[in-house]
Length: 288
Image (cartoon, rainbow, N blue to C red; front, side, top):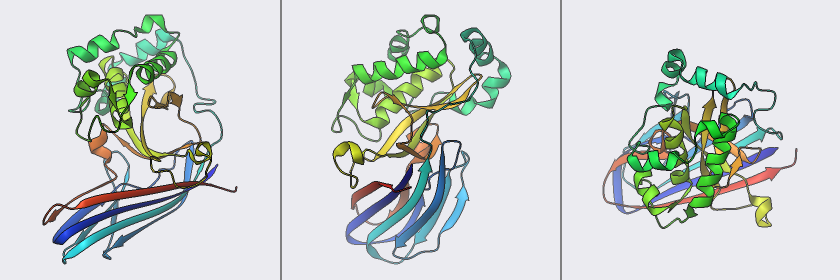
């Protein structure tokens, strides 16, 4: 499916600010299930963009604005084609016994160590261990089925509530609240997977739902987060515990990291007083 994304981020300040240094991670990746055919970035006030890839292979645009300004606008536009077939099609599958053997292999653990170790957001606490104990491997056909069960259980036991948490909320707090947003759902699933040694990473991107909203246009919650888990013997597969589905053609990946902090879409520092942030995302399906 061909999908177009327009993403506008606006910072407004009551008094002029200066020395603004920024990083943008809003370029869709190209991988086995999606291809980015066009991407452009415009910033105002105008500035020279430095482009590079970070440690995780995410495309970053960095720039500075030193002169005084009361507004900063970042607009990105992309056209992405996603595959209209189930993820993991034609990828190898193996038995649970073989998966466990691969998972415990030292070479496997060393290769994916960044996505196995806990982070501040995904700390392994006694509460998390108790939550994870609901899902022993022995009760699943294989790790793929185990992950599907984990995703559906998070979806069933948690309440989506945009007012309950913030971008700084950890898994420990989200577990206590049993509510939150896609970031919290993703961090929880990642933490459970890592607690049993499964490499898992946080994914930032877009979720096209325009046709499900009786419209093909502007849907403010199109920005989304989900999880990719590396299943031994198969590879990285995507799961969305917020909606209890596997990643499909509706998902457009921007990038991944250990947790939210690694893949913040727009971040920066500046000299001056506090401002306000407005984000508008428009995701549309185009004619092929």
